[in-house]
Length: 236
Image (tube, rainbow, N blue to C red):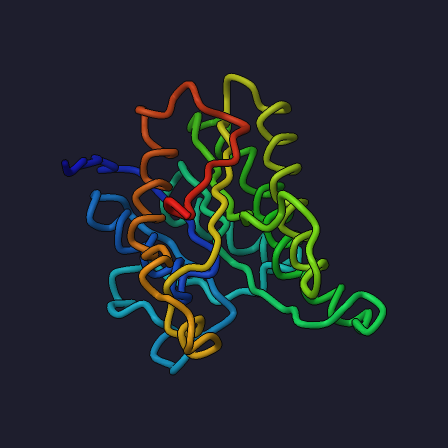
């Protein structure tokens, strides 16, 4: 069964738009008719920028762990398009394989900056505009954020923070802005296949399938859903 969404006339901002998941989300919203604004620290037409057709996206290069960059980018989006309906906090990364007592403090700063601070700053500056549009925020947490585990505790903690901030944003904006998170496990991306060549790729989730869930969470079909952390890790 296929489901179609119509986002004609809607303005979407996607952080981390050049990554594997960000690219899939951008393509999904473009297909649904939205005007897609994307931001990334990586420039289009470079090896690390995976969006195949960046010309279809209004691109804003920015570091979303820098508040000035965030404020300037969101102001530019609203100035150019007149509104902002949805914020998709996709920017994020993973670091691990090191126990806490061997982990550099710089790794803590890096993970919390990329995974949590970007989500906080983007949400902070987008919320006033999203209130006007009665829009929505969807952020990316992680299945592993539900419990501690050896080797990647800082990653798990940063993604747990995304869940808690999502619940807070939902509570603070009842009736005006919906906020939800998705919780992937291992996403089937070229980088993950390179990092784990002996894994069973068949159990990993396609970024396109996760993008469909983000479409749903932004749509009127999810009008009664806010403050949720939605599993998107398949039947494993």
